[in-house]
Length: 503
Image (cartoon, rainbow, N blue to C red):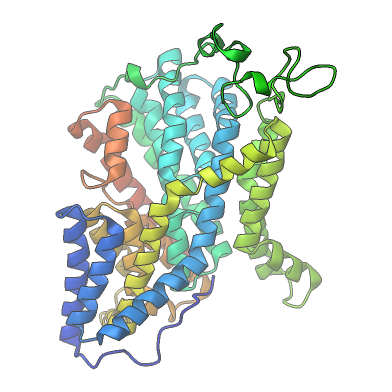
């Protein structure tokens, strides 16, 4: 993906190196303190942090505003559309029952020692199009039920599921973190996707089933009864005193007399029959749910393969360049899901539209954080901080991969936000990307993604989400979830370094 807003030819300030370093440190410190201590929303914290950075670096106020606004526009234009399309795919998977179908089919066919591995695989598959929090909400009820039914320790299958979700969230587009890093560094999305999957597979195995089997001995957990999914009897929705005998229409609304149709005329009124607009619903086919998840990934991978194997002017290369464009690939996934998870499953056009629209409000906060992070990054670059870091790293002979990982680790531990860590680290090391070859830029994006997952603790919303869903104490959550996240970060980064040896 090409960054839409290039850095200016000259910095916006004449500040010296010491002043620029101080400005960067104070700007980042402002973001960290506002989020971690002041409990300020990251969107506002990033705006204020950019202001602190610009003022301390002696950048004119109007230039700060222009630089920040340009970064916001560039990031939203390059990343926002992809996040929205990915959320739509996730929304259709969740609302249609397609995600549940994948989980239930796989879990229903395995047992015993293979179950943790199956949960890790299912979580990784589900995690491709879904945001981490959505994936947790979808998977945890299944994990709780499976633990009770097959008498397997909850942590033993819970950790593999969480590992599958977390690794995909941090390393594989179209998740926000990887997309932001790709955009900021100018990395190739197809290459990052392919290399990210190579790193993700061993990382999920080690942090999931392997670690889960170990830590389950030391962290006993019982499924909270209140969170176990239950099915409500259809009779609960009926009452003989209500019109239409308490039946619900296809949208879940109470059926009234005006909704009932005459079987002879098909018009409202007359003899009581099925509600107008009622459709016969069925669970979507397993293949449809799997194709929905994999279609965008396959199209983007085909484009990356075409770039490596086909001539630039060949018809096949041009076709793959078009269908593998991230927006086109994700749009294809949305359209496929609308047809096979929506209409073919018995949902009306209005319902499918509602599912798509309903998937967007939950990501509004993410989009705002990503946009503000893009603005913060652009102020860093325009003030000349990025070039300063690049020159220092070059003089110290410090690996760009290690630098990106360490910066992301520090910001992640301080703020608790993987997205903020990715955005800030990518902005700081962006100038280093110009000195790297194509695949190395993709590895830099992955190194930052690995660092952004390091040691989740009490300042991370994901920490509390896992604690409450699994009924753990704070100490148990640190022993299981926090250590798992650290394993993902370290093992993933080692995988990046290993790939760097051969690329």
